[in-house]
Length: 391
Image (cartoon, rainbow, N blue to C red; front, side):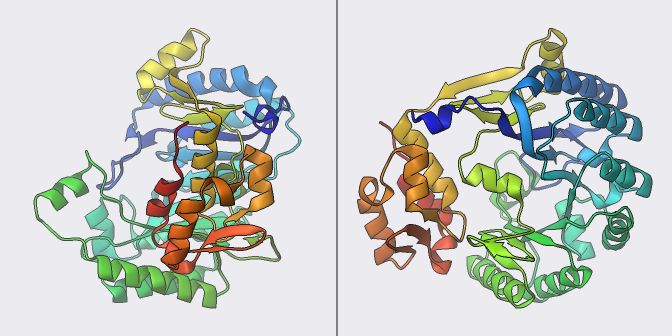
């Protein structure tokens, strides 16, 4: 394990999972549960304890509250969390993101977050088509999206991401184009657009297995091409397979409104993960909290972290995993940076795999970089598997 992975300086990235939702969406495989007031309050107290436990080893550049629906927390609960974070006197925060559902945004809550230090909102829209929102089991309407977006602007947020999905059963190219056009008219700083994934133990997967619909791969590919072309034409720079950002300036292929927290994952940084089911990677050790809110709370009420599992990957396995993550980015990997982080020469250690990708026109190897082509990005998950190695 290289010393760069064992750096004793404070950890610079923090993820917090809020597992509560008003309603479980048809496609969602993340750990979440319906909101209940007494359970949520118990969770908040446990989270405050967990934050206090890890705070001495943190001086975060990025913070990300994901879910679930973090915006479901009440004003009083957010005040508790914001006040505790403020008390740590962290002085390096550059980006602080909170995920929101359009049905749970209020001006008072948005202002509270903004005044408390939150710099960026990621709003889960998924579609602007009424029938598709119902198909996905979303609790918001298209009208709520526009209202909530304006509310966030009024509260002072100058960095807003909108999440969308394509490949939804029943979605046509016309509805996809219309959704993208309406999204761009709002002029958000960032767009995240994901193809529907059919995860086991979700209603959408069960419906697919039952033959209620079929996946149209040709249409999904065409939707992805439309996404890339129309977004680039509108001034959104694709910097990762599913992520597009506006830019005041672009450095190293990264637009200025890119999500810095996610880039930290793709570039192999350490981060703390708090909350039920949250994963973390700290100086070579990967840990995951229990995917059970009550069990999570019980452990924190005893004053200890709620780890369900812990593992330390061998150096080559970790390097392969890091290679796979980084190839999701359009810029791919600067070869010198990869060597500095892992100790391995990518072009020689994975020569067979790289040659195969190049032969398929899925990748490009230069004197100082390796990256997937536009066509290769479409098959990034498959390409990533080629780099995963064991000692």
